[in-house]
Length: 219
Image 1 (cartoon, rainbow, N blue to C red):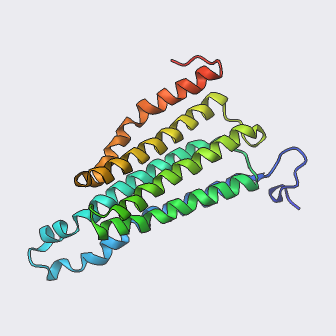
Image 2: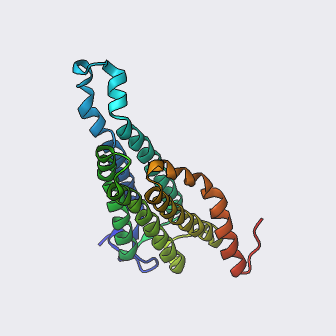
Image 3: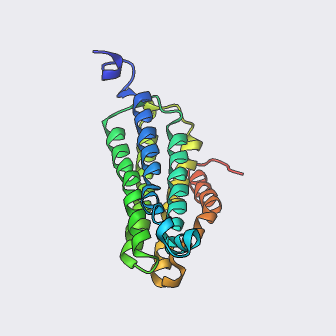
C-alpha cells in the first residue's frame, strides 16, 4: 500500500491533495450549471416580440437568482479553499463531512432553477434556496470544528481556526435571518440576502467572543 492509502505510521488519514482537487472540480461544475436554464431560453429571443429587452424582462427572476447563486457559490468556495489551504491529511470523517458539503453545493443550481421558475413570491422556493445555504454553512462549521479537534491533520493556527468558526456561524445566522425576513415580508424577496454585507462585522464579533473565552486578545 502507498502512503495515499492511509498506511503511514506517522500521519493519520490520507493525503489531502487529491481530495481538495476533486472538491474544486465539483464546485466548478456546479457553478457552471447555474447558467444552463438561461442558455435554454436564449434561442427564444429571435421569436419573442420585443426582442432582447422583452427576454430580459421575462427572465428577470432567473437572472437575479443566477447572479446571487454565482456569488454565493464563489463565496463558499473561497471559504473552503482557505479552510483546506493548510490541511495535509484527511480522514474518513473529514471526507464524509465534505461530501455532504459538496451535496449542498451541487444542489444549489437546482434550487436556483426552482427560484427562477417560481418567482420571488413562492415561500417554499425561498425556503429551499436559502435553507440550503444555511445547511452549507453549518456543514462547513462542523468540518472546521472537527479539524480543530484533530490537529494532526493540519497546521492551521488556532486563531485562524477560530476566525473560521466565526465566519461559518456568521453566515449561518445571516442566511437564516434573510430567510425569515423574506418569508415575513414577501415583497422583499431574495433582496433580503443583502444582509450578507454584514458578515464581516458579525464574524469579527463572534470571533472576538471565542478568542476572549480562550484567553486570547484580539484587535
